[in-house]
Image (cartoon, rainbow, N blue to C red; front, side):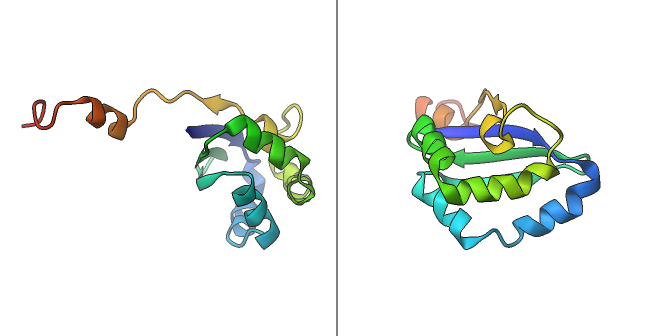
Length: 117
């Protein structure tokens, strides 16, 4: 499954947020992979809008694994100050975006070549 989420980084903290993500702690990278997330990317707009994307087989299980992992707790505590105030832990409570289009899914449903010029 593909998961996309959004958060808001404080505009005055964008440079530091970006710098910290240039070299994420190896133990945090391992925690993400151990939880079953893959193809994980973050995209940041100049106004601080952060869009995250990852793939996983079971997002609920991945969320539970990360929430229980002390490596994640330490990273999230360190990063929480970068986000505009949200309820709960920002990385765990980020609103999910609904996928409305996926090229590969639609191509798979289209008879080969029949809808292409």
